[in-house]
Length: 206
Image 1 (cartoon, rainbow, N blue to C red):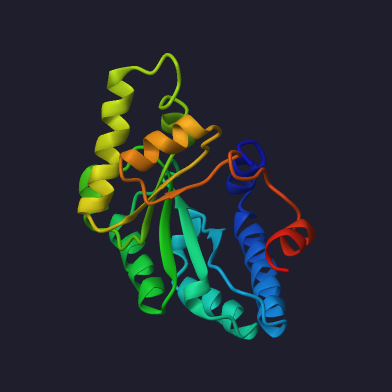
Image 2: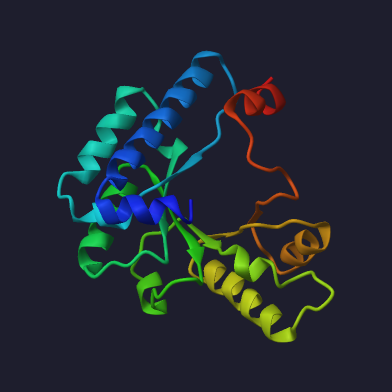
């Protein structure tokens, strides 16, 4: 993704990729609902370039509604490292999505240039700490400076009322330290590597 997503952003086709992924997610959720499976929210990337589209909220809502999927089962993720120069428009679109019942997350927090003041404006549900920070905690050569940074990010997220999620945890010592620091949700290879939808259904939905 680190290689092909920037390519599609540059050539302008990232919106089509976003839509394909959203439709696939909605198709799966609709199937699981029909089968009586337990449903969990699924995160879907939302490229910031698309926030210039005045019809975006209606377009995304129409896709989800066409599958009969509850809005609170879709979590739209923005990548913090993506550039965006119209903060007012971005916040407006995110507020509209949230008003329509969707969840909003900021992915890869700490890798981009979003100001702390922007966090107070954005209607986020979840702040996702980038793996580059998680890699530095719970390890033999852990530096106190790295510990302080991730501790304060977690504290900031909680004080702003966001769910704090750490990305990329790979061992139990990382899990234990993140839990001790009050991190709400932890994801990473420690729990599972990426798996196919068939594997997911067989392993978690049966």
